[in-house]
Each structure stands twice: as structure tokens, then as C-alpha cells.
Length: 489
Image (cartoon, rainbow, N blue to C red):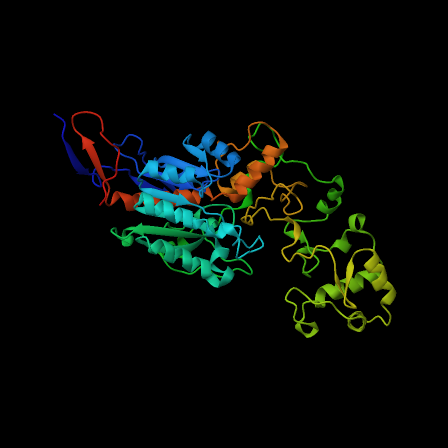
């Protein structure tokens, strides 16, 4: 006769893990009686999920509203992925059918908070986290993990950040958050993201340990410092490895090669742009609003932007050097200058003819009778060519377009495979299957929106350690398992 009893498996499910050169290596969970169950919302192509899969979690459900993302997820991670709008009745029915799980993951949309976007406070996507909250409330996981851009903590005076915390706390979860840069986890890319961890109130949050850094991560110019708290910052800097670099990640992929999966570019740009590419050196960018060796100005590339006289060039450089000085105005990104100011700065007694010429050539614009530079006015610059021996800037969805980033050595953008490596995806994670350009651009978009897989892996390890402290399994001694279920503790 069958009978049931509960077996505490904390001492039985021995996974044995260790950290080696920053890579968490775990024994497999696949042969165990029970694997922790995971529901993943806003899953994208699965950057966050792939680490959970590699550690043996049971990914019972994933969804995203993007069919391309779901297709890539199913081919690389798990077939149990679905195209769903989380506001739909179909999704809500899925949650009712699932009933319960151990872990919920969610990288809810961030476009309304992103520094790269328009930062719209009324963007409807800003409230999609409430659908994740609803799923957490229904499934009652022991723990959930959510990810978003660091702009969430900065934009709108942090109002949404506190609302998110309060809303999850109101359904019985203790919630904490931390800001991490992916480079700290061995990713060859600066990618600052905020991570929320919520633990059900009947469990102890103190049993959860934040992932530990393996590489040195320091704030770049213009970035706020990451607060020094939690186990991530308990490690002395001297014990951390140097950050991984672009060369470490893609130094063997210089020449494009269709025999390497996804190692392609779109070639969808004007051939004339080669004139610009050839003038941008390593560590440089096209930028008129910064006057430094790292900035190449449009007037330095007359082959493309048009020739100027030496006197006109002196005027342009005088404006570039002085337009941000406070004595000329209070516009944060620079002030137009009056004719007499330009004459004084250049030492020329007459500049009107040259100003008219520069207006006609498109180098200047008239702002109420004053003059300012025109073109390449992004502070961060265009056609940026990064150094081989430093981490990449944040990989974005537009990396297929060389107007934003160039390869450190080649006169082309990063290939899709190079972007995937800079994100930490392994080469066996495939994004394209048909060979078409539209699919290739979709691949860049998926990579740019993804969580860096090594970060997901680090969190998967921390969460498994947390779960293992109170995991129980319901077993049927008389034969097969009656249910694979985690007993509520």
C-alpha cells in the first residue's frame, strides 16, 4: 500500500558547487527527485533564464509578447514558451492552470525608464510590473527576481522604484533591490541594471545571499557610484579579477565568417560612410560638442561633410570650446554665441561672411541671431570606436547600425555573434536560422534587450542556495512520484 511522507532534502540534495575563475560550477539537479520550478515572464530570448536551465531548474513556463523572442527561446532553452500578452485573459488562465511554483523571473519592460529612451512617465509599459505582481500573488513562489534599467531609480525622482517595492510588499513579500554592473560578473560589457529580490514573508530573507562579484567594476564618467552594500561589496578589490575586455570576448572573430553562427552584419548602410569610418580611431567618436582628442568633428572629415576654410575652422573650434561656458548662458548642453562673442574669441574683426558660409554648409544654425553648432551634437557621440582592451559600453538594440558603434579594428559594426559574446551568450545559443537580414536585425534587438546570461547564472546559484535551506519533497514510496511539488514551508 502506498503511503506518503515528507523528506527534508536540504541534507540529501547535495549539488556541490564551487567558484572557479568567476564561473559558478554546480552539480546537475537533473537526476534529483525534485527540481525547483520556474515561471519566467517578459522572458525575451531567455538571457536571464539560460543560467537557471544550466543549473538544472525546471523551467515550466515562459512567455513574451514577441513571437521572434519566443521562437528563439524555444529553440535554445525550452519548448514550454508561449507568445502571451500579460494583460490578456489567456495569460491569466495560464497562471490559474500552473497553480504554484518555486521561483518567478521577470524582466518587465523598461522603455519608459531607460536613459536611451524618451523617459515618458505616462508610458503604459511602466505599469506592466503590476501583471508580474498579480502572477506572484497567485502562484506564491518562495522567491522572485525582477530586473530593470538603473534609470528606474533615477528618473521621475525614484517614484516608480518605491511604488514597485511597496506593491510587492503589500502581497506578503519582503523586497530588496541592488544595482549591479554586469562587468562585475565576468561580462565584457558595462551594463548597469537594478535587480529586485522578493522573499515570501513566511521565509527568512536573511537566508538569501546576493551574488558575489568576480571582476572589478568601477563607475564610468557621468555615472553615479554603485552603493557599497551587500555581499557583492564584501570582497576586497585586490582579490577581484580585472574586468573582461572586448579583446577577451571577440579577439578571435575579427574576420566575418558565415561558418560561425550569427557572425554576420547587415551591410545596410551607405558606402559613403566609409569616409567617416576611416577617420575614427580607436577610442574616438564623431562628436562636435566635446573638444577633446577623443572627439572627431564633422569639419575634420571634409570628404563627407564638406570643406571649410582655415578661418571657418577656427570659428567652429572657438564655438565648440566655449559654448558650454556658463558665462554665455545656462543651457545645460551648450549655448548659442553672439556674433561679437565669436569675433572676440577668434580674434577676427569680421566674421559675418564666414558665419553665413557655415550656415549654408550646414555646420552652424541660427538661434535667435546667435550661432551654435549643427550636426553630431550627441554628447555621447556617433560612430564610436571602442578600445580592444576595455569592456564594451552597454550593448543596445541598434548595434547593427555603425552610426552608433564601430568594431575596434574593422570598418563595420559589431556582428550579431560579437554582440552576443559581449553579452555573455555562448556560441551554441543561436539567434538566426533563415539567413535573412530582417531576422538578423531581430537578433540584434533580442541581444540588446537581454539580461547578460552570466548575471542570470550568478542569481540562479544564489537562489538555489536559498531554496536548498528549506526545500521539502513529497514522495510516494510505493512507486513513482505522486507529484513533483515543493511543500510550503
